[in-house]
Length: 120
Figure (tube, rainbow, N blue to C red):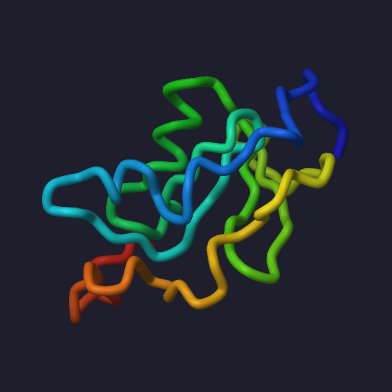
């Protein structure tokens, strides 16, 4: 895709952790369906299907418009402003949460009725 203006992408920015920073810090801890990593600063947040939608909230609060999937085996980028999949440089390792971490996650925090709590 062609950018309307070049987004800020820092391929060297390390991910902020193995899970959604805000869900992990919440009391009681929250949970997520899938994870997204900010391509500008490495912030890891939960996807729009997750109850709290922290990745999108981070994009709106910071203006960091591009995220990458933080799921094992996925490497796509999403541009929130243009609302399209995008291309960009490969981000620094690790490029996903640990393969043994469940999705939804984190282990022990996901309610039994999680499927009914997803955003459509």
